[in-house]
Image 1 (cartoon, rainbow over the protein chains, first blue to last red):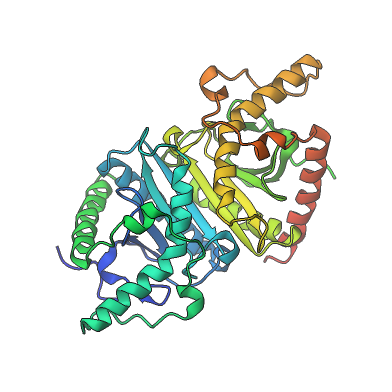
Image 2: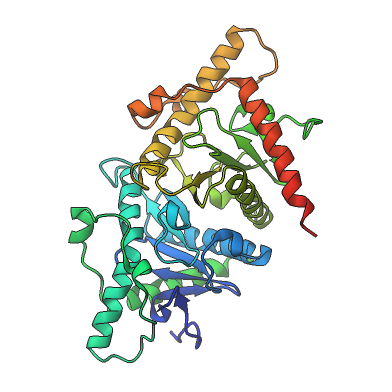
Length: 198
Length: 198
């Protein structure tokens, strides 16, 4: 499958091009380094802005049409029956990477001991998102890989807002190759779902 | 201020007309019986459908332009700095009233002991939404008020998915008059914010 784009896609200051599985004119969808549940993905506007209110009307419309299309595909391919869709809009709501992003988390009956457990997990994840990317960039720089050109985030972004719970810490970050493979698979599935549309 | 509409606005099977403070062609915003924090409101499509994927493209676009406009106003008037925006899309994600709705919750620094506490609260709220409306309808019927004409919801809707925490149980449902006053105030503030728009 050819790459979705020759553009460099940024999530905050981080380069995430190989994690992207869907592009619309103004938005993109990416797979996660540490999904909370299978199929946990993010959708962001292509323009790097921190707050939902920073988006133009066209960006809002494009973002949520993308959320809807992505939701449909991840619910189908991960055999889910429900979805959590959530935006932490600003630092005081738990946002760590200052770039608008909607979490989409496929859900099934009894997939967690309590349905609401996902939120504590999401908060830890969100708090960790900055940290995770810092760690990955560090590893990538150390291994002298040139592909990732993300700026080094400042301390503000890198600081997690919440102590990670054990379950969170025990989840290993996925390899770049694993994420790329999932992104390619989801990209094909997105195309499949689009075929039916007029 | 004249009523926003002569239509009867339904949230699931419940009539919420007097709680509505903003109407767009395809969406409406309503104040909450038991807000988790000041300014916690809901935005729904006018068409009663359970899942996000049930919405047409026009409904998705209108819904989130409405969420953006409402967010702007509640963040301003409740002097917030951030917002939680969340949809429980389906029963297995914690949805209790089977009518698409986005929670908008204004946030400030240190408004809760932990930023993520809002999610546990929201889940209890969501689980309780059905129950709350059932209780209110019951009270209304008992007091022979004729204004509310909501159908009696079935057991499925009425059953809360989560045990309510103490904090939740201790929050008293607001009176119809209190909600109506807040809805009228927010309606005026929404108009104020719209004046600046071209």
